[in-house]
Image (cartoon, rainbow, N blue to C red; front, side, top):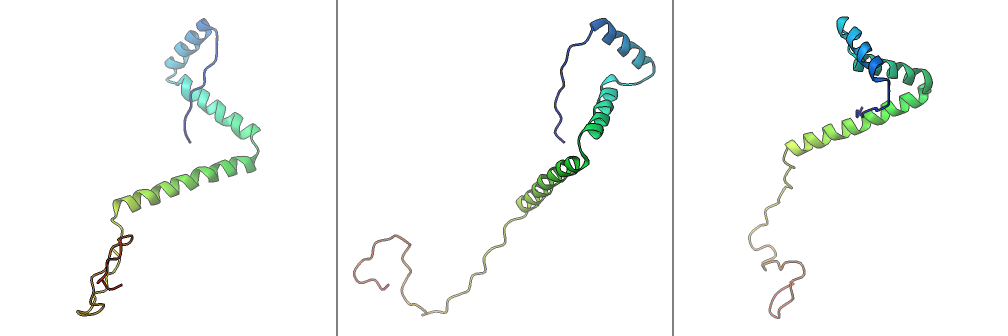
Length: 105
């Protein structure tokens, strides 16, 4: 999932104190808050909605992988069938080029 920042106001002294005690226990406040938000997500968002969002995230990832694979490989060349000598006889005129008398169509 794409990450976003969450900003809110909190008492500066309390924040500094909790950071100090969490650091002593080698716990990250950011990781702890992220875990808390994940639990809230699981608690409040219905399972079918969570499943739908998960499926939506998987589709673009698969499409992107296919696009990257295709970009890495050159497109297959169209097979060209050689024309036998004398077949058609006349040289082809580019599309949109004017017809000149004496040319065969």
